[in-house]
Image (tube, rainbow, N blue to C red; front, side, top):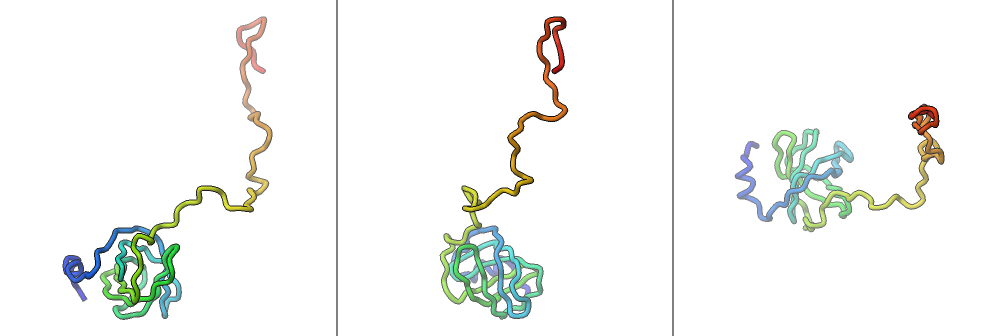
Length: 138
């Protein structure tokens, strides 16, 4: 099925919002796979993956911090694909996971990577003024 991107845009019922985030897709034949989500609308999304998906296959999209979204593959062109979702989602809620502002509770840095109390650098010497010469190594 070879249809240009402008044909897809004219057939869309909902405006798509650009996104670029990693997600997972549950597929009957391939299991859970990694996908790259490129855009999202209330009833669909566009993405990319390395697998050979067929139009009409049922999938479940697992977006970060959202409930699972079942749908069907609506189109495919190379590694790109579109999914028509069965129920509406809020495109504003579809975001990449934000990095943590603070460390996870209860996390302990392994002993080997903890900073030592010693601040002196081995092999590093400093100069001090000496009475008999202007420069003396310590």
